[in-house]
Length: 209
Image 1 (cartoon, rainbow, N blue to C red):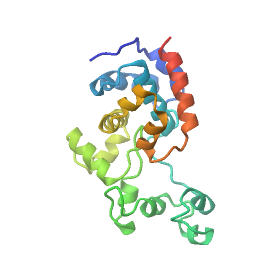
Image 2: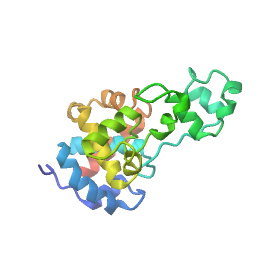
Image 3: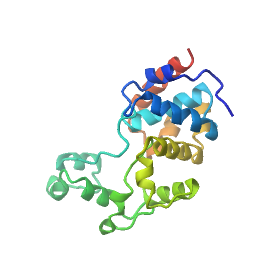
Image 4: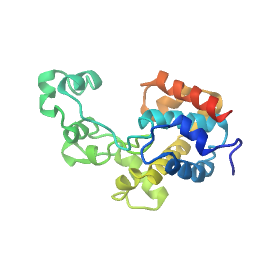
């Protein structure tokens, strides 16, 4: 399968101009992997680039930033951090925060297992949770213990994002222009929806030119 439009490095540079490692690195991975997962039309590629650009800060962050203050924790996770006083032990402690907020869900063990931090968000779509890491590792033919390091590489970041995209039938959402439904599949809510749509509109304009 090949792209249904002319997908060039120059076009990608206009979509992710500040990408870590340089645009050429990402272009080479995307050109090889996107067609494997049937992400080949302007709409599908634009949606993929929009969602991944939002989740990765424009292809600059391959790992979730959990360096929250006690005050911020109460706003972001009000059900888990009910007061600033309760949040204080977690203030600016990403490992402790991840172990608490991701405990006992997504295949992770309890807060003391350390799996919340070990399997925190990584890659272009911030793959999160032991269940997702295990499923991707099985697909990619690697051990789950090796998955975190792999997903932080450009190759693994694109590979894991494409796998998640295809596994969650996000091409169908892209074809329907259902950005709200797509965003819910990716992060469970509609956080950053306006920014994602902004990225999408820009990508469509650039890719379709």
